Structure formats: structure tokens, C-alpha cells
Image 1 (cartoon, rainbow, N blue to C red):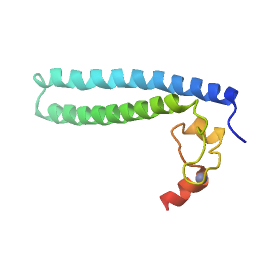
Image 2: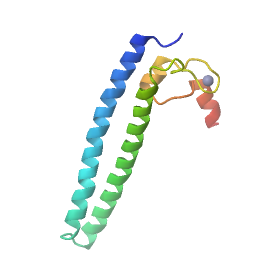
Image 3: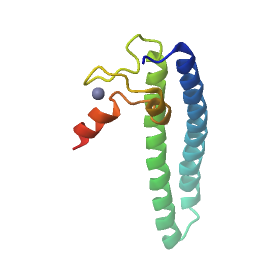
Length: 117
Ligand SMILES: [Zn+2]
């Protein structure tokens, strides 16, 4: 069954909420990577290593959050296309439940599993 307009709106709202969270995460992560740099001048050797590790983690999570944000934004930009929610592999519906969990899905669960094997 194709995804209804009401379902699309619900998904859209869900994605927008996720994006709000991501923007917050990105802001926090950018702040902590900056803070670490400022503190480094004052830090001793051991804490500098800690600081570098923390900074790496902050940068990694920043990278992931930015990538996720980009993916979700691209989902929003094509949510109103007629073929949105259709599996790129087999042409079947991906299903609203799967899209709610993973909005950036472009394959149905069956094809996804086959592609991962
Ligand atoms: Zn499929």
C-alpha cells in the first residue's frame, strides 16, 4: 500500500524533530571541540592526551551528526515525490514503519538484507 499524504506528514514531522536534535548535537560537539583546543595550552601532558581523545570523539560524533543531518534533509526534499518510499531495487513499498525508524532507507527490508549479505 502506498504511503498516504497523512503518513508522509507524520514522517516529515518525525524527521524535523530528529533534525532539531541533530542541530543541537552538532552545536554541542562543535563547542566541545573548540573548548578542548582552548584548554590545551593549560593542560598537562596526560590531560592533553585525554583532551585530544575527547576532541577526536567530539569530531567523530560531529561528523556522524552532520552526515545524518544531510541524509535527513535529502529525505525531506524528496518526501513529496511520487516514488518516495519505493524500494530502488525491487520497486515495492519500503513501508512506513521502516521509514519511521530509518527515514533514509531507499531499499525495502528484504532487498536491504540481500544487499548486506
Ligand atoms: Zn526491495
